[in-house]
Image (cartoon, rainbow, N blue to C red; front, side):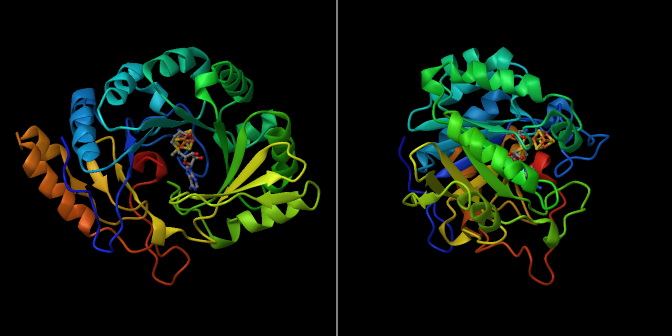
Length: 331
Ligand code: SAM
Ligand code: SF4
């Protein structure tokens, strides 16, 4: 099935869909969730595997090629590898990838690779156990590193990315250890600027440790050279000048990349979001469950995508943080 490409009102072609498969998580990262967790969605509120697969097939017929599964923590959704298999079997889906905190990778890496997962991003914010615990509120660094090692034993899983959120007065101490980690392992480490999507609404602009500050600190010790920028890439990637490893910077706050944004998101309860910072969302679950056919769903999706926000307004006067925090959106 081949449909007209999906385009927004600013002429951007949509090629990337992030699907949150659960709002639940086994961590409580300070920049994302409150210590006590959030009121979880009920099971019946969450899209079934069949519902997700039907929507993904429709999106892929409209030109969405890259599919990233996220959450909450996607690996806590029961039967997750089975969903991966269903989605990677859909014609036109070029790549199924996942963002995970890595806690269950030791258990699931083999099943996920076998099910057709082609890319893995593992989130690790500190390489020191006590600081990892401070940020995630889980004493889980050794478990995550073991999972990463199991994952790395599968050649098909490479290249593997390790993502760290960059927060002022925390991450400075992590910068050189992560640079050294990127140099001695096969992983590409990427720093992501802290965004105002935390459930506690504690974010302030001063807490954003910018990618440029981190790059400068690294290059002073280990000189870096820029890699060419790929279309729609969110990360600015550098290689170490001596050829040992790569490191990337995702700078949504200090250097927004909205002009080039080709992505949309589907929440675990079936709401379509056209921007991380959207204040409105479009319910796809209700029409789906009411028996809408593909052409009706297609029209609802096209209308929503047409209204995709031109840019986010983080750091501008009057910026309003969305009601959903990162784990409920699907980052
Ligand atoms: N639980 C999985 C994980 O942590 O990788 C997937 C979901 S998590 C919401 C996706 C990514 O969003 C993670 O890399 C996480 O570090 C990042 N993230 C969460 N809150 C953030 C925030 N306020 N600013 C920047 N990145 C954030
Ligand atoms: Fe969970 Fe990921 Fe949010 Fe951490 S960042 S609380 S691991 S969803």
